[in-house]
Length: 111
Image (tube, rainbow, N blue to C red; front, side, top):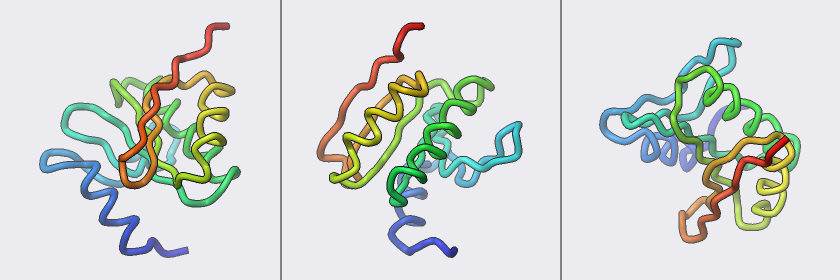
């Protein structure tokens, strides 16, 4: 499925001037954006299954050393799903809505 204009614009904004979009991870999947300062960002509109895959990609980016921080952007109505999924997969980072008006820090759950 092709990306919407708003999704592409959000990725470019998250990457910033010195960052990149569509960064390939060691396992072959692609990350939405990686800023010049090492913040990996995934923007996801696809509901619970899409959020699950996005959190997995963020965990791989952090674990492989490509990113020093992770950020997940989801619509307002999916914030609770995103929070629960980040906790379940033990990925700590920032969770925001698409407009960046609501931000939550998700601590990495201890084993």
